[in-house]
Length: 179
Picture (spheres, rainbow, N blue to C red):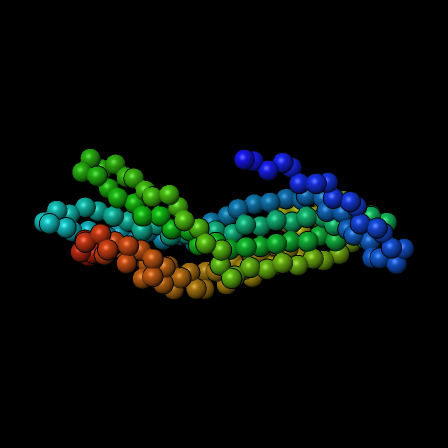
């Protein structure tokens, strides 16, 4: 039996002393790969071998929105940004014909990220609230630098905690190919 729609909520009663709630106008969004790595492996089981590759990447989700209090002058607008980094992994296998098949990617949000807001300034046309908004761009550059600084350690940790145990549980021996 399926439940019906939830009852309509009643609007909150406004107090004349309550702070105005800002209206948010969707600005711009982007997703960008910050760093990627492919770890090549040879898996052996019962004298049969196959090539495998662990693909890791850290990507950044970057959103910038314009916020204006409902009762305020448009010049009181702020640009808000939200940056979130994600580690993504997939395991790929090569067939004898050279075809490559990969598992569905698994993504996990990293603690590296930043949220903030800054005044847009008196002239929104001269200082648009988009991905190039200077304070948001500076925050993006900080997050990218932090992600790059520890990416290899994150890839190594993810391999040791998630990938290697999964492969070993299947009964394979793991080696790295000779260059």
